[in-house]
Length: 349
Image (cartoon, rainbow, N blue to C red; front, side, top):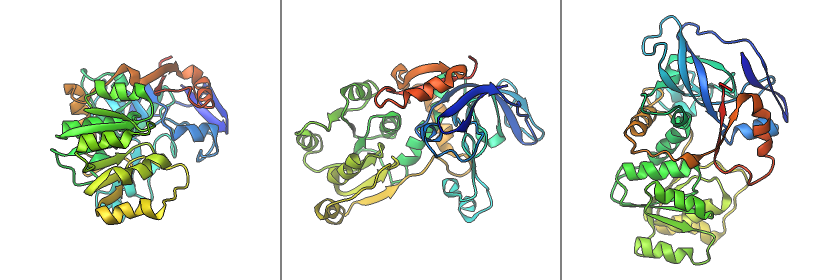
């Protein structure tokens, strides 16, 4: 079969490799689409790849073409989304159902061959079935959608409150939608790009605030009656928005950092003291899994995509690029600002 194989930094090749098989307890998936994740970029364009040669790709959708011995929940022809984490199921964290915290895990698309290929073989539990009403494009967005839902529920989330989402990228827009689905009084999204704020409005957000404007805090006071937000979700992993979360939080608020930081972060005493004076709760979120594995994050994503309540906008997708041109896709990321949205790799081309 054909695959995009990473051989070294800045060296990903479209070439022939051995087609995997559906061993016991596994299924073989004919891949349709795979989204390029932010974590894939340093593994191709940087030094973050675990080993060479490697086949990346973990945000994928496709069709089951073979089932191995012992597989009971899936059949040939099922449309599925890939679940990339392969927890050990033996450690203390796994025994508690905290699969995201497993220290002995494998991961499809980084620690074992992934979906930048025509086919990928995965354990039965690592393929989530979705109905015909859900597109393969949506299927490739299951993973970021589940990350957003997992993050939403890392705090004691209840409806009827004001919610702030910092960052209008894919994760931020998904988090905003989940907040609305589960009863938010209002959802406000913060970004510095007006086109992202316009998209957030189309997806049902109540307010969009351009945080590059000097008077944006005046808008916050208008929206919240001067109290700040009851729930604050940081989804950008940006030093500015992480500090901003402390400023936007109301007294007794709950704050969750979903975004992964990429730079060192420092606070002034006054900035950090917000947490003391407001007595807000701060936590983090990692990946998208719960018990029983892979978790209802995945079931709910399939359900709400099907009903249309979890909205999917074509502008989520920047471009669809054939697998045969995967090297060109990663070249785009070398020029900041070129890629605006998700690139989907089409494994059938």
